[in-house]
Amino acid sequence: MESPPVITAPSGYLARVERSLCAGCGRCVSACPFGAISLDGEEKAVVAFDLCMGCGLCVERCERGAPVLVRDGRKGIPLDIDELLQPRP
Ligand code: SF4
Ligand code: SF4
Image (cartoon, rainbow, N blue to C red; front, side):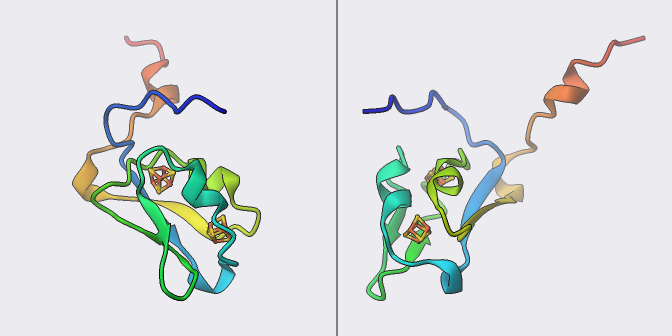
């Protein structure tokens, strides 16, 4: 079994699911270490926005491209690693 990612703060993103692409396989549900994604009564994946940390594991696990990460202004600004690594004057 894979170790869950070490993430203690929201990434600044949120997963959203394109329902028309979801086949209800549940792979994203078992991948989410935060219990933030589940299948609804129509066997479509839905995200609990208050639990989602924006880690992207559900996006990686889905073979149909149904979940995507979108910016979530309520969860801070994502770190731009490339920007942080730029030399300072
Ligand atoms: S992995 Fe993709 S197709 Fe499967 S339930 Fe999740 S969103 Fe739907
Ligand atoms: S982005 Fe991460 S926390 Fe959010 S639903 Fe997907 S796997 Fe779960």
